[in-house]
Amino acid sequence: MSLTPGGDIRLTELDLSAQRESQLRDEIGAHEVLLDQKDSEIASLRARVKELEAGLAEVETLIGESRGVDGLHLNGDVAPWDEIRTGGEFERLAAFDRAVAALLKERGK
Image (cartoon, rainbow, N blue to C red; front, side):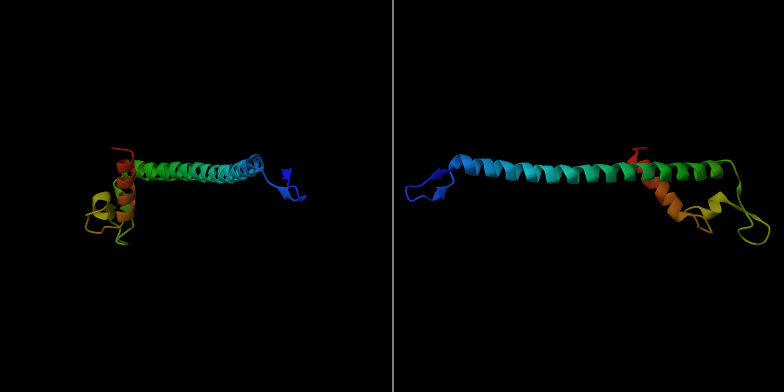
């Protein structure tokens, strides 16, 4: 700062530069907080995806280790998996099959 001959205070370029630097540091700090929040959100979503992947894998294993669903038709017959999966006569697991397909596509398989 400097004083004018009339006693007024005038900001110098150096003062303005320091103010701008302070303003930019504050903005950077705010962005860093947002980045930390997003990093935390991403970590949480990744954990959730792992849980969902595990659930899909368990159902896939169950399907692979069994013949179908007993009691589904309420007539005592076993409903074979190929009848209740996508394209089957009693298609009941289309959302499951889409989820598995999306996961495989995401994983590049």
